[in-house]
Image (tube, rainbow, N blue to C red; front, side):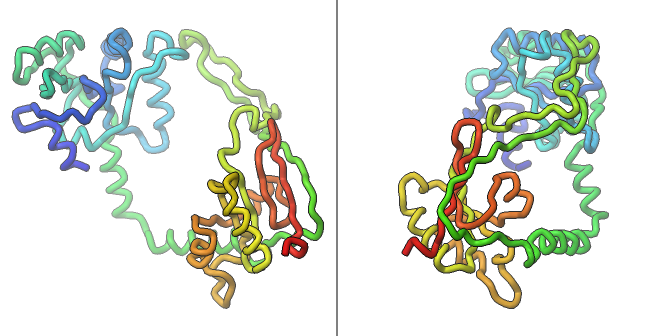
Length: 326
């Protein structure tokens, strides 16, 4: 990734790449004066937000939300305006950005570097004259290099223990005693997925003053009012050959060409037998996924084989008796 970034700007500060959609990149930090950031965001919106890319070096671990919130509140209208802000420590490394702001400005398919506080128009004017410039004041970067943080933590992390814990959790989630009964009679059921808010959710008020309550504790949302099930979901016990053959016949039908296939946990790569995942992928000609207990509950699946599809604001679950399907 560093090499690809290095190729975008030559040692002289210019390149002939046309791979980028934006024509100005501005390296910034939340440590810059708020007035400077507000001005740059306003200028970017006036130009067309997609033409300008703002780049930050990183964020304090587990505090990316705080960084984004702080930057959003500097927009003219935090609730309607949008500018392109990306966390990209590789770019900071490749361009050797140690202070901000730094502008990379595209002019006639070449890129030029302008350092220091200046308007976007001012940076463009300097780029039109060719060469690299040092303009106004530069500021220290407040955010850590998030890649350095990750690299340092990786050196100290006990990966073997982590893998062992992950395997243990997977074994627990896929424990053999988790299973679903086989359907004994064809039927159709309906299920409404919901989410209950565990605590009040608030956001900043208009113009950044005060707070507003976005959702109250105990409030319940019908999830399919806000999203949709992208493809049908098929649930199957892959140790039952009757179910496997039935699902194979479903997958040959156009309406289930893109369906996701989930299998109950006790069938996955059991050490003493069972059905290997690779074999199931071959049989169904697509990836297969474990049907964790909680996931089955979210879909409302009570038995297998079953087909889950969206029907308005609810899920329709159809159950099929494999014994009667030939």
